[in-house]
Image (cartoon, rainbow, N blue to C red; front, side, top):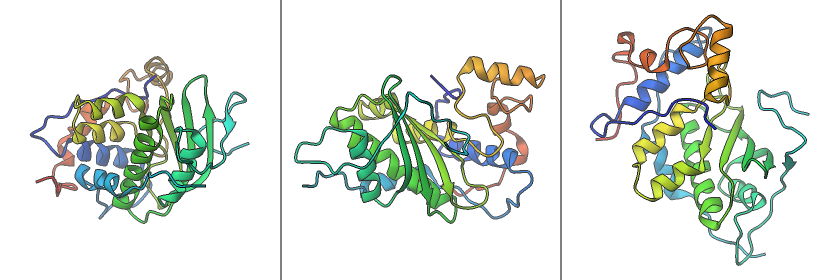
Length: 249
């Protein structure tokens, strides 16, 4: 189940994901002022992972994401002495680490969680830091504790004009990172590749992306209906010089 094509990052190129994300923002926000915005480097975003506390402690929607009858609403559950990595514990740990959960739904048959959260971010770096926090809670509070959840889909509420609308995490990315199959740069690029901005198709598999493009007379496979593939767009010359300062040195 995918929403886009993964892109392997060259370890010598630390700006690929930032360039890709900035270009997607520009294409999806033509009606908004985009001057002066900046993106968070992978190192900055993932630095949020180290500050998250996951220690056990005692004791109908108007949205592009659809909630169906096979999904149950989750309520927060404080982890006990032997946490089980339940969706309720995930909810609790998110709020414990400063993420304002609006709603959380669980589809056990598909191994999916759908998170609606209130963003307090004022800019792109703060938004990406929130993503880093949620990733760490997903990794340490769910996967490391034996959860069988495979996917986390998110819907971002509040925030600022031009902010990401939603994004996803997959269990396999967590496991690949923990096993050393991908590094933190590749992990962050996976997340960037699956961010969704206003006007973009949300959470479609490859067949659905091709169908969406075909309906608009385009066959580029990225689902945005513009007839140009995302990799080509990301490498366009007119992006040169934008958001060039990557702090991975």
